[in-house]
Image (tube, one colour):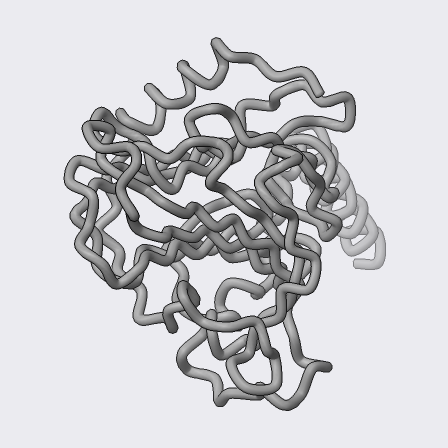
Length: 265
């Protein structure tokens, strides 16, 4: 797959300059949990080790640009998840769980997996359904292991996570989760997806911000029902020529009725 190194650098600058998000979601922590759907609500059967550093997300993701379809991705040397088109050309969309002057996570410490989530892990207003696999959400997880300050890149490090969970063909959730160890100072996470850009600096809490994407528009995630709601369709404005024609017909109709009334008297 072709990637654009210059695009990576530009996108890093875009997110670094993006609007800060202060949202803190009260969601369950997925990091360091198992992958048994019957007991913890998540299942990651297709875990891809750090090699290869590319893959595809089979369920639709509406980024608000281009067709709504599954996405290809590559993981760049800095650890960003970069999305590409069907030809492998970087589209400029990316997720970055960690980047910044003092954060370090090499390519070969990132794994990814296609799996399933219990909806209650995304939406804390829902009752757990760990034993009902029929209610699962399609999901893709990127797990960043051994995240260290760049000054000591061989430390045991933290484990950070970004999860994409499908709600509908037009709506999905992007959830950021962090380990329970001390945060990496100076680290920054964020994304640039379609027309949406956000970044948020550490130190992090155990659970990071969560975002709803509906028809390519990002907002702070609240509930699955709210995020899945159909986007409001505004009525299209009536063309001026059609409005003028309608008024002319109405005026002519009134004139004919007035003439008919005069003749009957």
